[in-house]
Image (cartoon, rainbow, N blue to C red):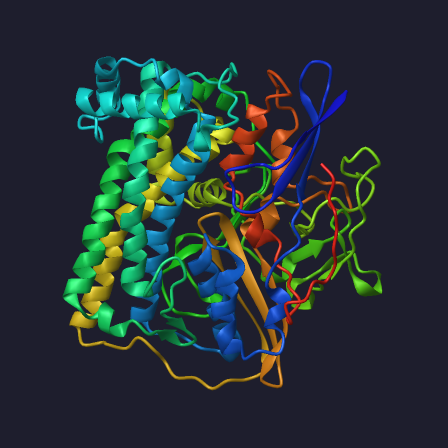
Length: 562
């Protein structure tokens, strides 16, 4: 048995360390997930006007900005009993959709794709053969021509010969886990470069109704401020044009690449590599009405699937959420072991490392808490959304998943894997992108019918509230307690807190850890398999750890060994 440390995990948002115990046969027997940075925003909310928390909340992260913004605003709306107008919901949904399309494509190509394609192999590709291969996956593949692929190969070769490899530095390029041919590698390398330009389109679309990107400015308690944009045909057409261009790349590059990955790495999916905790939770995405949270319906439904039992979708009860700290660097006063977010505490208690610099297993080993639903760990994210939607009978999700597995000739179990988690993100991008015209039609029909309301007045009041819905990375909730007109307590339980959580008091692993156990390793000193699986969750540790002294003072200083 040997312990291996991967620190830092790169190509993510934030700071993450993974330690694995590998047996003599090269199989992972235990895994520890540790966030090593202590930072955040929750404490700074205290004493502030609840109507301001959305602006502060979106600074939790530079990637998930809009979603923290929306959850923070919704938490205050829930506290005040505010119901927003349908037009405000439409604009919020359109920003959400554009942000998801942007986020999923950027995550795969710029952060995750190099776990699957090999830049060194691509240097030796035949551009003519690559063009033929691209046409096997789509009749009009994106940017596929001999001349284009020749230029991409020349760019990569010049880059490699410069000795300054940038994002390709330190890759495990000789690892046997890479299975694509040189031509297939060249196709994905081309799309990696293409998306650097394409991703600007969906980012610009979020700014049409959001005011700016990455930190939108148009949401307020009671609705949105971009009402002039919402009734302007030119602005609506601009949004549509940008998203049509972005979705063209999704249709002709992203989706064909997902089919390619499924064919080349399907054996790993069928072996169950990266399967995880077997429990899936979604808070619901793209609300279809403005009713209170417990009565709201969603385009992608809320629900829970336990133990991969697709016959039953349980409703989500917000009161069953608790955060544990048995293996996190925090303590709870009063001897509590788990606290509901409305009663949440954030008391740092760093316990250090073992003498050899490895993580301790008997106490705290991460700055991430351990959220649990009714005591159980839950995977959240695109795969969880699709599993819940599939079990709930969502026609669009069922068609996408069934068509994909039928095309590959594989069983449904394919999805319970690192490969499945990666492919689903691409399918969800198509599903949401294809739904945009319907949302546009809802907005234009409402405005055309004479309803130009984008804001509802309200009366501020004390109380407790929360905002719960899906972000691209999964189930996101913000919780606020208002006393004497100001924030008395604020907690954010984010997707990566669920997925990257350490073990709880019952030694149940979080999704990252569970997904690694049982994984065979070709060479533990080149942990491509670990990187691949962790990246499939799209980690955002900046969101998962969010504490800051309100005066900007240093709370504590720690030196973390490697």
